[in-house]
Amino acid sequence: MSSQHAGSPLRIGILGAGNIARLHSVGWNEFPENAHIAAYSDVDTVRAKFMSDTHTGGTAKTYDSIDAIVADPEIDVIDICLPHHLHVDAVLKAAQAGKAILCEKPLCTNLSDAAKIRETIASTGVIFMGAHNNLFTPSLLEARRLLSGGFIGKPFMYRTIEVFQSRGFDPWSKEASTTGGGQRGWRADLRTSGGGELLDTGYHSTYRLLSLASGDRPVEVTGFLSRFLQSHLPTEDTGHVFVRFESGAVGEILTSWALDVVGARQFEIEGEFGALAGSATSLSHQLYRWPEPSTRSYPAPATFTLEIGHFIEVVKNGATNAAPIDDTIRTLQLIKAAYLSAKLGATVSLPEDPAGIPVPRETAVVTPYSVDVPDEVLG
Ligand SMILES: NC(=O)c1ccc[n+]([C@@H]2O[C@H](COP(=O)([O-])OP(=O)(O)OC[C@H]3O[C@@H](n4cnc5c(N)ncnc54)[C@H](O)[C@@H]3O)[C@@H](O)[C@H]2O)c1
Image (cartoon, rainbow, N blue to C red; front, side, top):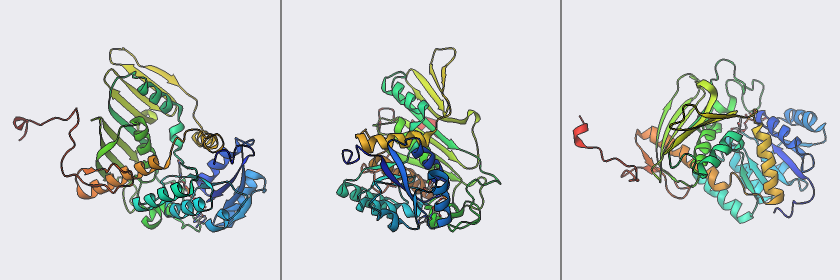
């Protein structure tokens, strides 16, 4: 696949011409020698035309459906920016048409569709990457380098955070949209969103957690869901998720449309010798006896542009894919486990296969850090 695309610029078809397609368009346009936007497709053809005019001076073709854009032989890459319930159809059709695929989060809305997607990606041999844009935040990349270099010793816990308060003003409201107006449009309808905040914005904090714990498999999940503020939503606006990894390390995810955190922190890692904490623009590193952390600052990253630059490298030059299919399926599985746990009020187990359905836990996993609680401390 990569040799097929090594020479000329990739021809990009953007499927869905809404909010995030705008940021993807800006990203693609940063790499004029390696990619150009050849088409937009949206059921709202006015929007597709607007995007073509704004980002390509009207040169990109416009279509009105998934089928029409994937049938265009002059497109190499399908960039999926659709509401969640349409991702599976779009990925399957793009793969069957032999296109390389960049797909917005979540991969899809259930694990059986995820397994079908994995099978089709494997049988067609197309390149697929999840649009996990926050993986490209420099502070996260540096934290991962420090972790793998052993700078804080064995990691004991990871905490990831992805929050913003959305109150009154709704940046994604589409009053005149064919996807349905009102607050959050399709996001407020489970048939189109597939879930609440945890499946949507929570996808970022979940893949961030998995990337920090890279190589350590999540085995147990406990989820708490709340609707603190967004009463119009059919399900949660906030998720707290606890994860036990195979090594015994513990993960905590906080994700919300109801609150913000001081300092816009996105992650913390506590280990044997020290700790790391990062936001989008800073990384602090502190060994436990240091009086002060050492802090490095970064300019605000354009994560969509970084993600697209990486995807181009994957397609054209065979670079290692930062968000391959199994990583995005594992992200979905962990979120599904948290939903099941919240429903049951119990901890659930994650099968080894990322597409395996989470099940209620029968016995607690024993890890090197497990504690056998003495009876004396009970009661
Ligand atoms: N990575 C991030 O930070 C981030 C942020 C926002 C959204 N997203 C993701 O991007 C995706 C799109 O979200 P959005 O905010 O851009 O939504 P949006 O509602 O702004 O845009 C979706 C577009 O899809 C179009 N559409 C609907 N049905 C269609 C069909 N059958 N064929 C073609 N077009 C169709 C709609 O008309 C609309 O223009 C979602 O998966 C969402 O989770 C990611």
